[in-house]
Image 1 (cartoon, rainbow, N blue to C red):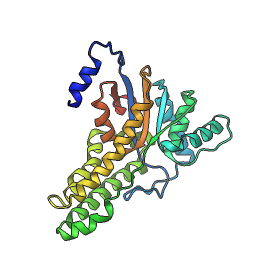
Image 2: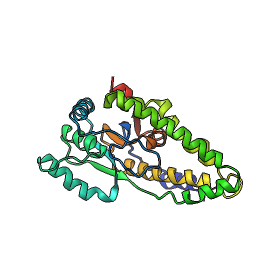
Image 3: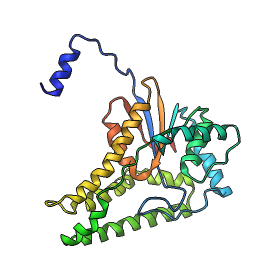
Image 4: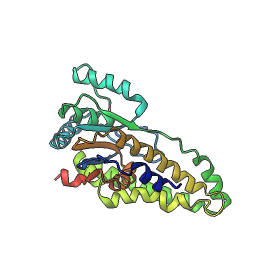
Length: 266
């Protein structure tokens, strides 16, 4: 018996009590505050511990706290939850100084303003196991131009973001990063260039992109596993590159209503 008929057969005659409302979820794509990080392409960011940036972080999280969210989710491995709980508890007691990471500068700071007892870790890292074959496959198939074009586009994008950061407030930059065209700009690096490498032969480019999707699908599964049906509002803070994929997943789950960040940061 196929899966869907089997499900109908098993649930026939039962009353199914599902979620009666949609949970609003605000996805915030951000840059990584600390460098060096683990990304191949990343900004060489300024000092987020400066008085100017600290003031901007206060303003930014003040606005977000008005959502009255009941969970704040951050880009930290799910296996680090216990350690993160300990650090956050020390922070609430005034015994811990936040590191430069956006996970703490935004995540911890916001959760405290929301009077939450915990910051939820939902990341799941999968190594990009096919990346090592990318250059060899591209060279073999006369596709090195794809990697060159990707690098050119990625660096142009980062230079754009760097200029925004130098000339604007943190809120200005994050609003810009989360515009639909900027989310698409990031995702297109994977779909326009990488997916084509080795197509029709070993498909190493498509498999590399699938590694990235797998990581985001695992993150998505952690999201939906940790959100209680009764919760009205959740905030997620992650690197910008994750947001277009997570947004697609969540928009196709009718338990959630994805909130546009620019509607919050008016």
